[in-house]
Amino acid sequence: MAVSLSNRQALAFFRFHLSVGIRIAIRTIAPFVALMFALYYIFRIEFFVLLAQALLIDSGNLVSALFFSAVSLGTAGIAAPRICFGLTGWIRHLPLSSHTNRRLAGLAIFAALIPVLVFLAIPHIILLKNLEIPFTVHMLGLPFLGLASALYVLPVQRKRLTRPLAIAACLLSVWGKWPFLLAGVLALVVCDLVSGPLLPVRKRPHFHGGLKGYLLYATISWRALKFRFLASYIFALLVVGASALFISNNSLSPHLSTKAILFGGALSLAIVCAGTGSILASRRPSWPWARSLPWSARQRIMMDSLFLGVQAIPLLILVAIMNPSAAAPLALSLPLLTFYTSLVIRRSSEYRMGVTGKIILLGLPGSFLITLLPFISFLYLAAAPLALKYAIKEERCQKVSRWLELHHLAAGDSLSWSKQ
Image (cartoon, rainbow, N blue to C red):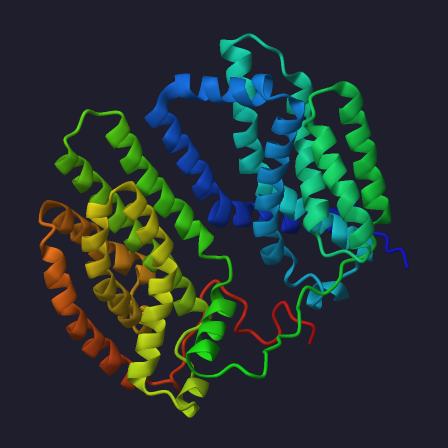
């Protein structure tokens, strides 16, 4: 049934969804764009001119279209769950048709993509300024790329029909030719017309019946983590990559090269543990049901530490490939880092800086110490049992019946963003 809205009501709905998208962009996406701008000041304009020329001129239209579409679709996939989580709840009682509700959700996702679209426009601006090559059709296609990406990630009724059309619209809109841009706009319009209403995004949780012990605990932790740890991995790999660039761009002795890789590896391990620990503290905190399972406090701490250590193993392998001499001190210091992270997870409600800030506060000076004095890794290993002892004590003293208010999260409100 069609619902007519007054101009004031339409403006209110528009502003609400636009503000949702902007908040998502500020909290989730803008820091990555800020990091890209920081890299611009590190590598200077010449590097980005060569990169833009290789991407937009030398590699051809298909490669550049695939790159821009992948970046836009990946970012939209990050923003969509946060925006669409509650669109099938109380908001359905408002005077909105299903198609209007879907289009406004797409607007919110598009608003969240604005920093990324601006970032994707930088190569065109660089070439326009430095090589005097006009890229008007590329620039005009970026807004349609954002709209098509939003349509692709929306949980609509006819996903099998709309997703191929949305991908085609993404590629055609940034292909770089006027006929392809017009075809992309046409595909976008058709995709919007055939999408249908939004579907609930909640899925019924399921477990396999045979899980028990460490495997069950790891499954619970992984369901809380999933692929959210990739953000911390990106920052960790950037640190390791910066160390590799520092070595390749300077004439260093093997001893100094080892120290550079050692510092980058130690800091990257702290970043990964901080990111993973922060997610576990917020999405899988200490909960009363775990006390009913046949796991002692020591076992829960050991399982958390083992889970954190597994997340750090790929970085250890990467450091070992780059410099085998730097891998041994990092491996010796990893138990202390994982035990301390397990301890901080239990105390996360006490820290205003959060788990991430607390781990980085320890990891940064610890990285400097292990770089200057690699033998101190043996002291880190000797201190690991002490960190384990305090973590076990903190786990035993957990008051699981205490009230923990959730700030900036609606997950604890039974009537917020739900179907009740």
